[in-house]
Image (tube, chains in turn red, cyan):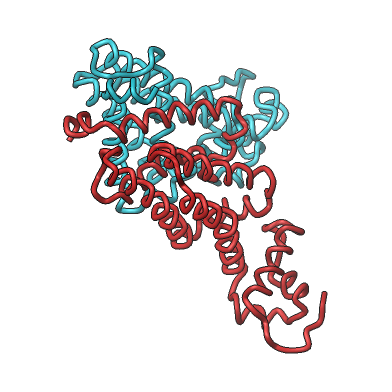
Length: 207
Length: 207
């Protein structure tokens, strides 16, 4: 416990303390009081910023998703220099790698994120929309280049790709990721998706 | 509680009693003793058949999956009379309908199945393999008819289709099924998959 000499409590201070406490005690056993203690403030003071443990869990998860997932993927989109299909695949593989690595190396925060996923619909939908926007930019580049035969709204296709690959990056499937077959199953699925993405004739036939 | 006049305790008796008890008290609150009481046998007698509550949950889930999912889908495969693409879509839509209906109308058993999914790897893999075999028969019919341009091993493609549509039938995504956008999102994804399944040129290009 550290004591505070002034009343200023920044969002970063609170999230750092909550993050540290969730990691130490686990998300289920952590109480708001534990976080307040680490900050050297009263339970009431912390409640004025985050009115429940759920609110604190969501705020930590939101920042964690930003730092662990969105920022590395944004860098990949900025630097994408391959063919349209290579860029799409690199994005999805990076998303999968980031999720699977978090699950293995950062289990407390990953399991908190998994629990929040089923509860905080708005937070998760916002996160998903950011993923869709990032991937949508790469889809749009491929469509503009005439390589992808897809819907004019590139985010529709991006969302399809994210849904189709859920098994490899959605936390509800984490129990499946340890199987040695997983990597091969992704490659088979990706091959099927690529055929769908590039096929103009089939596109018009199926419409 | 009913009393038993002989020692014969069939698997069906036990599973019926366990099913009824799980529905009444909920899977978390049910104890093996509750099931033994309903059967009119001692806790020890029941333990000789199912050595833990986990074993009882798995046995009930296994039967539930058979009755609620596998049997109706087997009937659909037997009666499939449309084009290959229509048959594939009918199968996947039926799988989705059965899962989503169970979640809405049979929440106790569905939530038990959802919990078992992350724990009983072998049971769930066996269930998945049965789904893959059923769908694989329909894929094989489409491949033999020259409509689908897919791997010689039809079960590889069937497994891809099941993985690609996980979001709509895997219990880890149940929280997403209430969204009114879900149906449209499935149709968009299905259209992308169909293009991949029928496109021979793209197939050879992508290899």
